Length: 440
Length: 175
Image 1: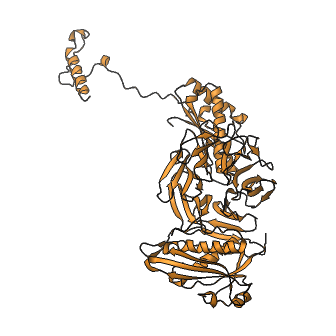
Image 2 (image 1 turned 120 degrees about the horizontal axis):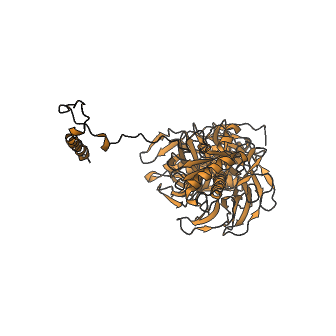
């Protein structure tokens, strides 16, 4: 990690755009605060020019884009203060931006349309290569949006810039789910990936654990204790309706979605011990997948749907195994240390994140499936619940700071680290959702 | 049932009127009761006896059955030798009191995976259940459940609290 890298602190103040009333209200609840430590040693210098017309809207779009890119730790944002917002590529003096050190320039026009619609015309200009006659455009999009979805549009622009300059899709236009605990109040919350727009979707006096996004991002599966024992629920976010999909004798927990969203792997103790089952997302078609007198838990589906990773103590200590997703003979994957738990396939299926305990410290690690090579990514001591960004570049996890539960994120190469905390609450059990598509 | 006291009062009244003066001892002064309220004869009534104050063995601090927690080492679900007597006492109690029912609640400390801790708590509770079963407790008398790390007895973030939270509790029905 580059120790000389300055620590950057971005304080996020939650705002809510109320479209129907066409007024701005400030969300009284403090959203997540994101703090970045460390950064990539090779940062891509990029300039985000002020967007023409953005001053008419409460959220400064170019600032949202800059904050996203800065938070990733792999971009160096060129200072654009005092620069005039270019409206057309012809307005851009490439040499001027190159002199400031930029390799690329993002520019946009924000144009109000009839009926409350907004058109954001965005371009990414190459400031290194220069054609004699015209500037070289790396990307050009016309993004139709609305007042309520302006922040989402800004995150999508950041995703385009990220992909054009790194070759990997961005994951800014995403949401995260997590649990907060304040006193005896447990809340399941959903927020944008930058901590804005935090909303509570379920509140209980009893614990909530293991929230996880459906592959299409419309539902959350989670475990709630409000009926005095753990039951697996699926809640549709748009309607707020929830259904108990696994409510058998004993404990019901550890839901994991199949990649097609039709099934869940769950863990039931109806036969005495925690064992892994599959069940249809509507609660029908229960099928037992493991048959041991040991703990088998924390199933996680491979992106191609063929395998399940899981934690088992069948070898005398908790270790990570892989088996076919229809059940069948498991293969042990972890051998170092006496406690390896919570396996989570990377989005490309080539590696998995997990929690490894060594010397009393619990840390986030990544293991390559083929080579078996392990890389430890964190050094906090009480890390739990790793969850991949959909582009595989970051891992969100839960940890503890000053006796309080906080969320943190680490890049999959271990270089960039972020801490996310909410005021006066313990935050835990994060789950990173899929990339959001704009609703036209 | 409001009529009952009136009925008893009438019976008492009749009994008092029917008492035979001839049964009184000779020379004894016959008490004039006409001006007094009738008194119920003792042979038809019983004193109210206070409820038995026998000590409930489950609540008696001097009885091992009042001890309700088994504690564990890190990662372990083995019942340590020092808790064998406690578990055996509960097993014998359940065997000799077939109407008694007990919940075994397994718990884990806060470190590591919440889901693994839920499963570990289950394994701890289930380990105690098996011993109780061997001692003659019926399956229907014992239910093993887990609270994982979700309901810590002690809230600090160090071993002094963690050791209290690695635990199986006995909770009898009705408690």
